[in-house]
Amino acid sequence: MAEPYQGADSRAHDTSGLRLLVTLLLNLVITAVELVGGIASGSLSLVSDAFHNLGDSASVVISYGAIRLRRRPNSARHTFGLKRAEIMAAFVNSAALIAITLFLFYQAARRLAHPEAVHGELMTLVAVVGIAANLAGTLILKRGARDSLNIKATYLHMLSDVVSSVGVVIGGIAIMLWKLYWIDPIITIAIGLYIGKESIETLLAAVHVLMEGAPSGVSLTSIRDAIGEVSGVKNVHHLHIWSVGEHDVHAEAHVEVEDMLISRSGEVRGRIEHLLSDRFDIGHVTLQIECGGCDDKELVKQRATQ
Image (cartoon, rainbow, N blue to C red; front, side):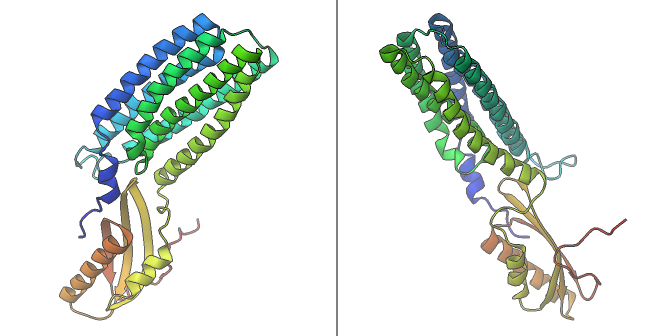
């Protein structure tokens, strides 16, 4: 069997527990500062951002726990291991961020309907502290976010806080200079639209993996054609491609071969496994070698109608 593909997966997990711990501590500090500053200045946006940061802290904890679970070895109870823990974490974190965004929309609508005076100077100062700390956390997670839905979901939480804090600073300056109290909820809505879009994309990608969809960029017909080029192969059917973890792609198929010795069919299987690993990054391959064994030779086997 071909060796499991490790490229992007190993890069994703370079984001160590120490990095996540530093990010968690930064979030807790920001939460405390913004909560106190929001109450003192009368800024609802700062209080909302404080709860947003508290949600980010939970996101970091979930991400770290998922990474630990993912690294556990396979067992008789979990023969694929716990690789999908990270996908579940990405799902939970993205869904939570969408819920937070909807809450911010609600608060923004209330503030637009009933503007309140805000201490612009204190609001701006606290938001600047939030920008610095959140930016540090975002940079810590940036590399891992490119290769892991789990880390990307947490990274988006941090990025949303950077953008939120920038919006709060702009709103604070506008309040100080022109008393434009309505600008704060407008900025909040704009931020929510951006973060909501990114979160929905991550959520849909996680759902696709959980529903055992074929990985993006993988074409069943391309795989069939590639296997068909292997000497001795007559037909490929009942092909299934899915991901157990984000970068752990599995494949199974029925491969019809020409009349040959069993030892020769083993060589054909080995060539197919190496082909799928090298060309398509499919690390776990299960093949049923047969000679006229199936009447149904559709590429994707259809469930029998009831």
